[in-house]
Image 1 (cartoon, rainbow, N blue to C red):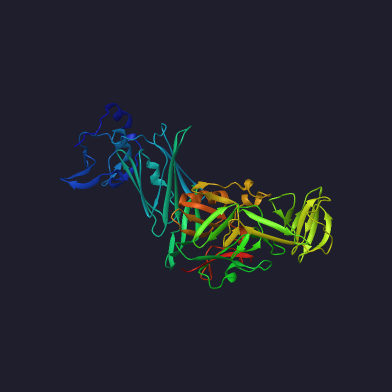
Image 2 (cartoon, rainbow, N blue to C red):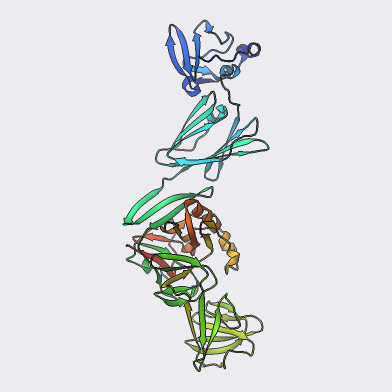
Length: 490
């Protein structure tokens, strides 16, 4: 048996005045039994004996505090060198969703950060931390604290919940921080061959709940009608899953951004990243879009569209169009309604052509025929513009300044976020997050293994329907939208 260090000078100091913290032998890594009238404690190569009415047997001193059957005085073991680990004070608090324990260390911590998850966790800490015995653990969490010679072993269980922890050091003063999360369990339901509904946690490093449909195969199509709004579920009643689509003008229901349906342009680009696909091959990027305006004699001229300005620019989104020094031809039903100085307010149901003042591409007057045509180059069967980009080829890519977002405030607000993503292996995700920001969502998707990801419309429009049932939590009634992405079973 390993002898305990013996410090005679400590005995005089301790004496009977030593305050006692009696702990069960099991907490100290020792077993207890009665043997020949003595109380015997063994474990970790140590054997201690106490004879009631007589005192401690060697190597312990008779003046040390006595035990109480299976309960041992912590102070005596500390004084006699039973613990080889340095002692740390402990403080508790709450940090967001986390229960936080802070160990105040006598010296800087030599290790790095750790993290893990599971239904049960074993966390060995290289410090004596008796304060953990007093921790107010979160409801539903069962904790077992063992004070061992080499440190403290913390065993945690939370039946029916997911435990997640982060352990990281801080300096000046030296501390070791434990953040513990007791989270709702994750969910997985089979919907069809190769298609699953899942509720998962992404860590940013804070936990973020995602509600998603994961598909290895199937058929994805954009659905909806410009100018008409409906709850996303009602845009594709027979779909396996429906996710809200891109942006639109709230007053008129005019789509904002590129929308291609079966190779036909439904709505024109607005200057943001677009989801493009053919079959089960998906791509993200700024589309190459060729737009032309045809004049009264059949002549054609290349034009820019919306944010992609040129000498001649077509505008399709309600709001102010054109710049100082330009003129605007307001077009309704393929005929010029008026020629006006820019900037000019574009009403719903119309489009406009802006050009340098006095220099139209061909003679224009009220009543002149004028038509707008456009196509993708190369062509895709389907396209739906969203934005901002979140993840590109496994890297964080959130940078709304590179896209046509003039007001950053909506992207900084905490709100549900809808997104389309896929893994490098080709698993497609249609998802809605709990309230967060797009930048945080991007980090969470990266942590889950997303290879590419694009935000769709968020806030009150964010909705994921699975077999007609809204799966993401929602306060009130879901907002009607103009477009959606419908996934049909393989």
